[in-house]
Length: 213
Image 1 (cartoon, rainbow, N blue to C red):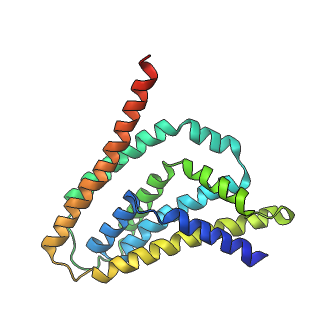
Image 2 (cartoon, one colour):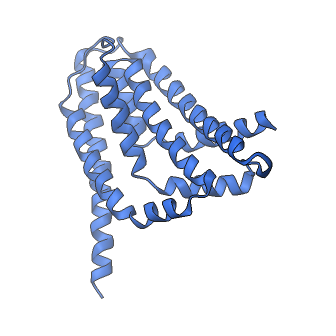
Image 3 (cartoon, helix red, strand yellow):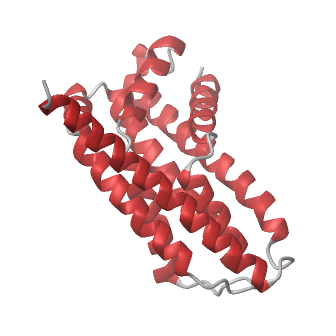
């Protein structure tokens, strides 16, 4: 039972993390440009956000999930603007060409940026809630213990995906010329910025539909 609950959470966390979007792109870019540890720390920020949303869904905190979903436009606005900022920062960043030293402030920045970015997608709560209901991840007999196991599984599964992604990208770190890395930073920055602009554009279109009869 214990192993089953943890493994179900692990599978859920892994599957939720696998779609490669702007966070995945940032992790790959940081791994190629700064080293595997920088990419992995960035991925762990997203894994932590997944665990937080998984915890809210598992505990059935409907007032929290309803609030976040209701305030989704503001979260998406923040997410779009934050993506534009990260895209511009990535575009202007200079690759180190070798593994960067373990700079605590840099790791905190990488972790925090992906954590905040992942939190701007409250729909993740609904995904976890649906999965919990369908798979019966949480056991009624030992509710809080089951919740803790499932959330630990979600974090582990999500972290496993980021470890694999950054591990593959890390193979190429140090083997790509400075010029190519600079070009990849430019391309990554543009793509991340486009993600942000698309989010902002969709928000504007939704607002126009609401005010135009």
